[in-house]
Length: 265
Image (spheres, helix red, strand yellow):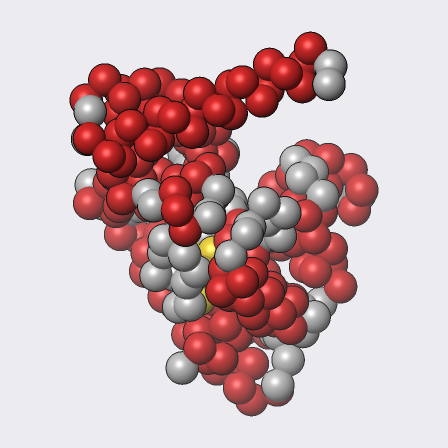
């Protein structure tokens, strides 16, 4: 065994002992040590959530909100169930951030109204034609110009959680009550048969919905969520501006939310 392998093994043993100590005795020092150990997860999630928020939302505030989620995850985590803590904690951390953002109602009412209008128009056209609407059809139904529709989609992408945290359905896996796009990305560390089944079911549901999208919207979601490309990089691939990629991404999410909510009923 190499020196690096020995160090990793020793670190793993030490972490295991820390978990065992905390769960057996609720020792405050062990809890604090676990918080320090996993605090980088909070910064990671905050960075990902902040990418879909306006600049007025301070990333440091997101970290503060997320720490409550981390502490909650440490308190409720059951190591004996065989789940990887990082996977469990990310959902809790993300949930704490989103709950706090919702509680302060940071999305302008005008944007919320536009979201409802677009959702209703989208559902009406899709029900009539059994396919996603074009921009022209959506604009006509809304009695907007295509330019006004594009502006609305861009506003929604800038204030909405247009990242892995976007809720697209009502089914959830371990540690959550809803399904997000991020939850459907394969977790190679999952060790529970039930967890694996739920993840597979969620991926299948999302995959079926994505396959009904127009090719450009499907490509944007694939490159963003599964290839981890930035919106700017996707724009270069498609030969369009980053703003246009934001619009395409937001329109695709409207479609996925509607399809998955319908399938979940």
